[in-house]
Image (cartoon, rainbow, N blue to C red; front, side, top):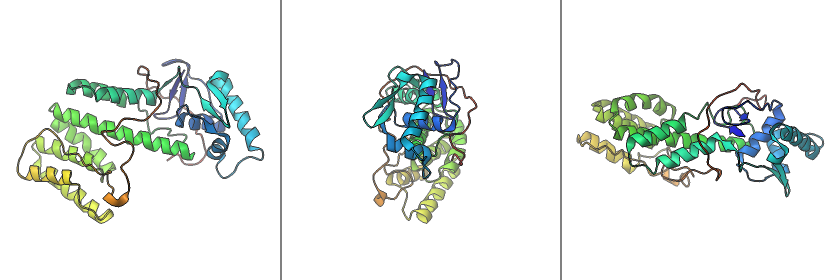
Length: 297
């Protein structure tokens, strides 16, 4: 069985195989919560709260059991098991697009050849069909998982940009990073990559303008200066020093030093996720009803 969460929730009998219908809203919500916990046990109370929010049914345990029974009919009784005080989704022999994404990015980090690294990162990013869990993000645990996978997608985009800069694709990367920087203007590593690509493409003034922009934003919105690494890159550009290695901010992107520890998905860290790893699954979207009538994002 294949589960897709990097976009709308999709279930298939096998990668590229027929779609498994899980159409009822609350049943899909149960599946989304179980997938967000990546094979770990989710308590009955947690499931009820995530699926029904502040309006639980009159008999929540019975209502949840009914939804679990419907889910079992769709994906197999052996796939959704009761364990202790909760339920878990058995993923031992299943494929999940997020797990495949994790594995490809991890493999790319082991390669020394930039072209090979770009190829694997391309394959990883092609698995994304939209925002993670984009039709099922009402539940707290699903929102948290969606944010985590989005952070990892951004890290993969940064690592691919760095590899392409090292491969000499300065002009193309500089153009492509413009929209991403506009979407995440305080993300300092992304800024560093854009500045490096612009400078190496012969667009020094634009690189310096990008630095002045982020310096102003950091001061106005967070009351901090750019990271030492970003400031060092700025100085190198002013001095016309040429280097293929972009500066990388060490602190959490867009966060003041006193704001707390770095996110779990720092650029150089490992990628969390289920321990199973399978081959690349095709990224084919399918229309689905939303898991909730509320706004998804």
